[in-house]
Length: 146
Image (tube, rainbow, N blue to C red; front, side):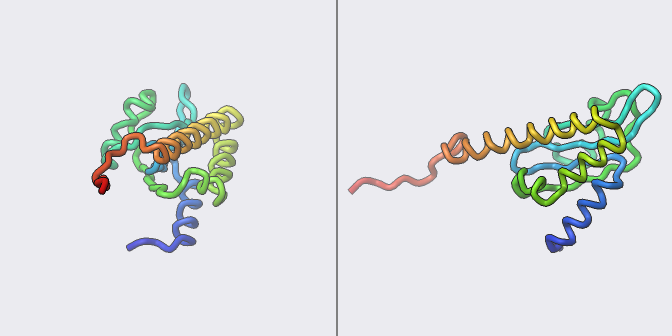
């Protein structure tokens, strides 16, 4: 069952404000924005990009590589984003991410999150250019000349 847009936005906002570890996967560009607010004496919170993985278990296991100084998360919130990257910002979700990062990790974490989001925007622009140019596309039908 699909959630109405308003319900989805409300749930996404709540998760972005409260989840200790969250992966928002941007389907169009094949990347996940990962927010990990866990910390210990040597490791602070992090905002990073990673490739989309095929299963929740694979994302959980990816933390061995992404955050080797910390144990695997006890809970992981996963959220798909099927719309345009710019829509994430237009709906105010990026502001929520940046504010959360500011509160949890200060200017450095906020800058990391902003930079990761900017990379998503660049990837989307490339995706759209490639789509228009037909890069990676294959003709399946061609009109025969009379």
